[in-house]
Length: 78
Image 1 (spheres, rainbow, N blue to C red):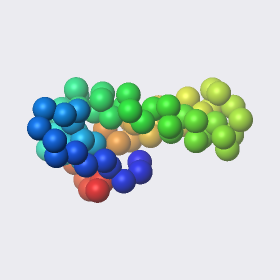
Image 2 (image 1 turned 180 degrees about the vertical axis):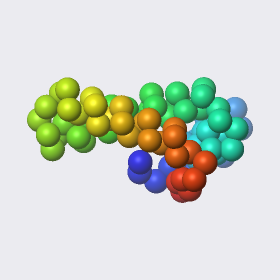
Image 3 (image 1 turned 90 degrees about the horizontal axis):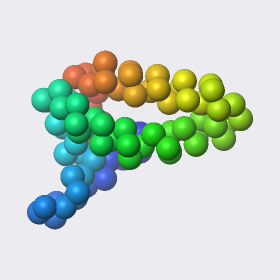
């Protein structure tokens, strides 16, 4: 993932760093889902630009998110 976006405006859309902290420390599936929705297309597009294969790109994108969830307690994404 790229550097996580910061956002300190009250009542604004949660910043990526806030969402990740909720995932990491509270196992928040809703926050993870928001990050998934924000980044799925970017990760898929990037992998497709290298592989030129839709099925493999979807698999890789899925694997990335599965690994993020599994390793959420040990990853320190800034």
